[in-house]
Length: 118
Image 1 (cartoon, rainbow, N blue to C red):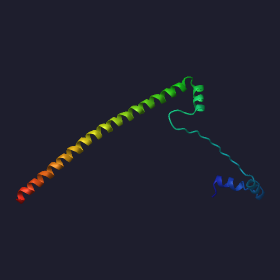
Image 2: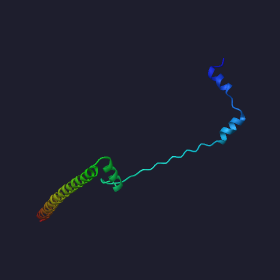
Image 3: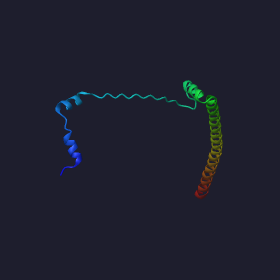
Image 4: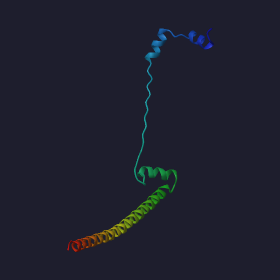
């Protein structure tokens, strides 16, 4: 027993001329996209102008944010350098202390070895 869908399909058979006409038509689809990318906290002047047009004062806020971010990065870098300098100073002291105790152990070993040999 055939279903209604099959009956509809069978009743709508296309002729070879219809099939040839359908195949000769070509569908052309074009896709175009564009993107804008920038690095850093400040967008290019064209984008700043658009921001300012949409929201008055936005360009000033963006520049203010970039300046604050730059100041923050400078503070972090200075803090990192201070810690590194402090660490190097301490490690230098530890190196000299270690060398002194190494010399002391060597001299004591030589003295003890000489005393035992006599």
